[in-house]
Image 1 (cartoon, rainbow, N blue to C red):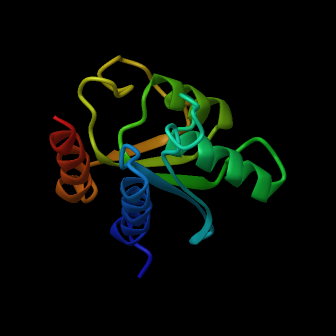
Image 2 (image 1 turned 180 degrees about the vertical axis):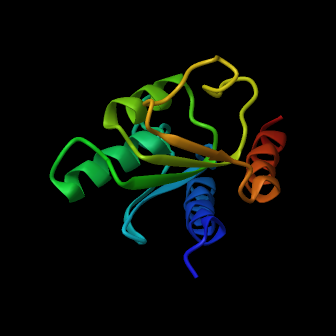
Length: 143
């Protein structure tokens, strides 16, 4: 019922909302007890803010919902591997699990040899083709 694919589909719907706003189509959701407590997508162009990545928006929203800065016992589903900035924020938030759709070989934190909080579990490759194709098509249309 509540699988990684189930929640990644919700994150992917957020990516499509970003696409409609001509934002880089990355979306994410934060889950606590099988419940979506935050959903977000990139808003860097809309807010004219380089830090308005989907993950940053979701971390802030989830922390507000929970009434505290730590996201222990929460899972973040994100369509594209977090960048260095977002991975730092996820580490500070002490999130329990991060599920990544597509890897970002150039800007993602994994190839930069960075890690999240020591207790954070990382899963990659969930709906990888769907997650990567929306980003690839977006940038293809910009060329």
